[in-house]
Image (cartoon, rainbow, N blue to C red; front, top):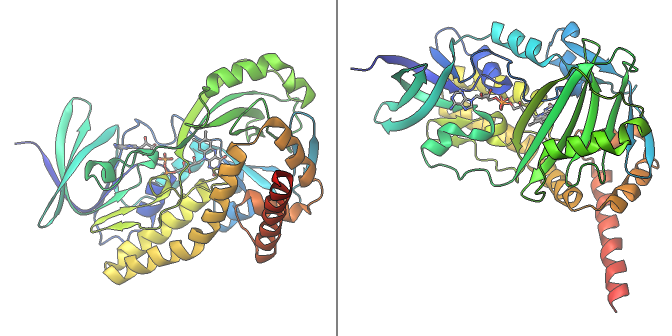
Length: 387
Ligand SMILES: Cc1cc2nc3c(=O)[nH]c(=O)nc-3n(C[C@H](O)[C@H](O)[C@H](O)COP(=O)(O)OP(=O)(O)OC[C@H]3O[C@@H](n4cnc5c(N)ncnc54)[C@H](O)[C@@H]3O)c2cc1C
C-alpha cells in the first residue's frame, strides 16, 4: 500500500500565491503544501518588479526590496524619462521574499514534491504526488491550485484547457555596481516585438536585464531576442552595461482574458493559475500575496459563504480593470516599432501619476473615457480615409 497522508487542504505550488494562502490558515485547519522545486525561491522565474507602497502595505521587510525612483522608457526613436518619486518601484530580492513568506506558512511544507494527478471521491480528493523516486497519496477535503501557469490541479480534473497564450521572458542578472541604482529602464519596439524589455537594479548592486514576448503572436524565442539585443548597440543608447558573469532567470505566465470563476466544487485557484497578473505589464507578485492571504482567511472560516465572498471580491477588484488592460495588451502585442515611437511620444504628454496607473493596470473613469474617445477618433479617421 502506498503511504497516504490525510489533511484538510492540499496546496499545490510554493510560489507567492500558495505560500500566502498557507500563511493565513488558522492552526486548527491542517494543510500540506507540495512544491515541485527542491528549494523555495529557486530557480527564480520572475523579475520581481513591484511598488514600494504595496510592499510596505503587505509588510515585506524593507531590506528585501530595492527602491527605484526613476525609469527611462525607450522605443526605437523616442525616449521618455518617468519620475517615479510619487510612487517608487521596489525590485524584490525574489528568493529572499519567497523564503520570508515560507517562514510564515502554517502547512506541512514538502519541497521536491510534485503533484501528479487527483481524483474526486465522496470525502474530497485523493491526489498522487512524487518525491524523488517515491509516489504516495494525499487525501484532502479541498485543493488550492497555486501551481502557476501549469494549472496542474485544474488540468488533472479537466476543469480547464492548457493556456494557449503566454508571456515568456528571460533575464540576465549580473553585477553592475556602476549602474545608477535608482534607475530602471523599460524598452519597446524592434528589440522586443509583441512584448517589452526591462532593466531593474537589485538589492545586491546587480542588474536584471530581461526581454519578454507573447506567444503565439511572436515566433521568436526570448533567447534569440536577447542575443540580438546585445549585438544591436541598443544597450549603449540606453546607457546600460553589457552583461558579463551573468546567471539566467526565465519564466512563463498566462496572457489570456481574466476569467473570474475561481471555485470549482472543492478546488480553488489563485495566483497565475487564475491569471491574476496584470495584463498591462504582467505584474503578479503583489496580487498573488494579497489574494492568497485573503483566500487563506476565507478557507479558515470553513464556510461556502466565505469562499463565495472571496471570489466576489476578486471579481469586483479585477474583472473590469483586467478587461480594459487585456485590450491594451492585445493592441500593444500588434504594435510595429513606429507605433511604439508614437506611444512613447504620447507618454511624454501624460502626468507621471497617470502613466503609473496604466502600468499598474488601474484605470480611472477619466482614463477610460479618454481611451474611449481616442478609439472613436481612430475609427473615425479610418472610416474617413476609406471613403
Ligand atoms: C519573465 C517573467 C517576469 C515577471 N516579472 C514580474 C515582475 O517584475 N513583477 C511581478 O510582480 N510579477 C512578475 N511576473 C509575474 C509573477 O512572477 C507571477 O505572477 C507570480 O510568480 C505568480 O505566482 P504564483 O504563486 O501564482 O505562481 P508561481 O510563481 O509560478 O509559483 C508556482 C509554483 O508551483 C510549482 N508547481 C507547478 N506545478 C507543480 C506541481 N505539479 N507540483 C508541485 N509544484 C508545482 C512551480 O514550481 C512554481 O514554483 C513575471 C513573470 C514572468 C514569467
